[in-house]
Image (tube, rainbow, N blue to C red; front, side, top):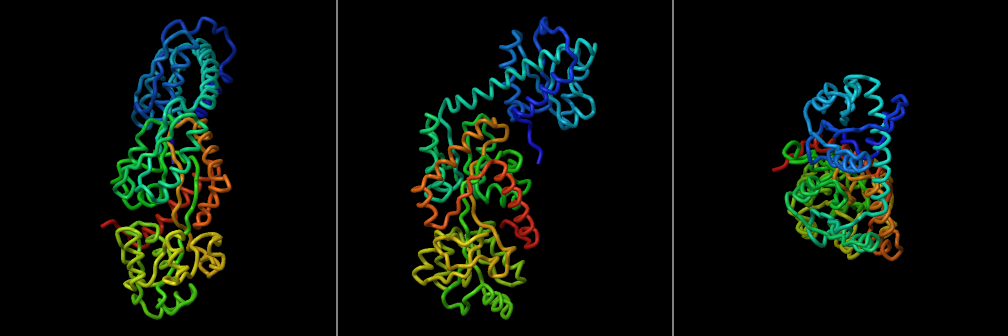
Length: 437
């Protein structure tokens, strides 16, 4: 997954130039405006960072640093334009362009070029260091919006509204939750993905928009969730639980597998809709155990639960928090937790791994993302404050009592989780031949 460079990447580029260029007297440089050729289009993460650095450089050098966008051919067009220019300018080239020796600023006299590179690089290092410190100390300076692409009252909305007061208190600015629903969450996700990467738009993403939908919709999606978002923090996972109608004569996962094998297509399972977490879990279960169980999609969790309670379907994968009241009342029979560990609210319930099917894992998860190119200092700040919010004992207890499992790790672990989820559900979708109706 290729992402535009962020502040750290640009800092390393300039620092490398400073170290490699020979020492020379650069006190007179620059004596005129500098043209910075950028091989990426306007409005992207690289463009945003470059313009921020250019503004700081202009102040430090006493001459304007002008950004000129020359996108095309994986940034080679811009790099070539810079390479063929007279010495005394700088271009942020794509790594492939740099590998071909097209790093700008090397046309013309080498000694003059190195003098200019060294002066510019050292100024850029100072500017970037100051910029990063300012971000860490000054963010936020205006209200921040958290886009939720699911309906008010759902898990994504609840997590966002729980975090927003704490973020507002820590940042001394409002953190406003905006619900932008529709198209399976894609409408809100697109809005967030195409927002400026300045830290003032965050997205409460989830398994649908950030792992399943990209595979189901493919090129029909007007944005790329894997390239257009930077993971900030995985807030929580909400495990699914495998439940059956009380009339089904089974008491374990192995009983259900044996019954389904003995009577192919006699059983049906309800899901919250095509591409939902319950649908994915059901198909993974069928593939892993080699079963023929009929899938019946409903428009949401409520009608699917009602169908199971009425005996219209016999099996369902639903989140613990929604199934728990029905399990405790005896209206549903729980067989296993679809997760890596047992849940505190149903300690007697085994995991699918304990039931002999360790491959059957996965369920809803929710976490904050930012548009790609958002400064790392902002991402670190949000990660730290959100983690603090959900580590408060009374907040944590309120959610864990409903079966929620918190993660709250660093951005890198969230990125690894998203990548693993994408591959898991891609495999299931392709093997099961799932298509949107």
